[in-house]
Length: 108
Image (cartoon, rainbow, N blue to C red; front, side):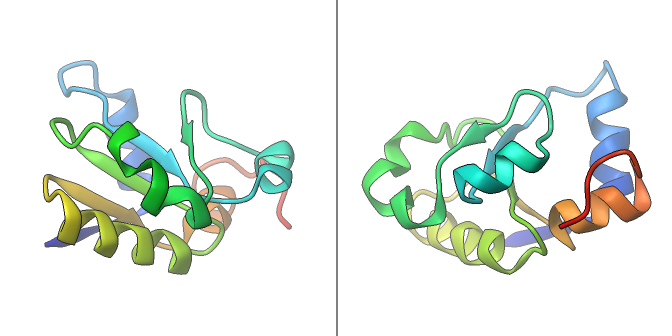
């Protein structure tokens, strides 16, 4: 089951040293990452996920990220069906991160 995760919830998770860090799977296009990205993301564009899914470690929590949350939800559903694990979708994507967590990130 895919769990929604708000931008403030993800920020709190990343800031909590007692919690293991998730894999931040950014499925946006390279030009989008050039505009803004979270530190430490694993970048695999959505179209490449089927061929590269083995690169995603299903043994640790995965947070799927895109611009608004739609592409990342599709990837989360695909990964859940293919390999299972603890999978989250960043609700509202990087747009929500910019609006709710860090307004210095460029909106696009």
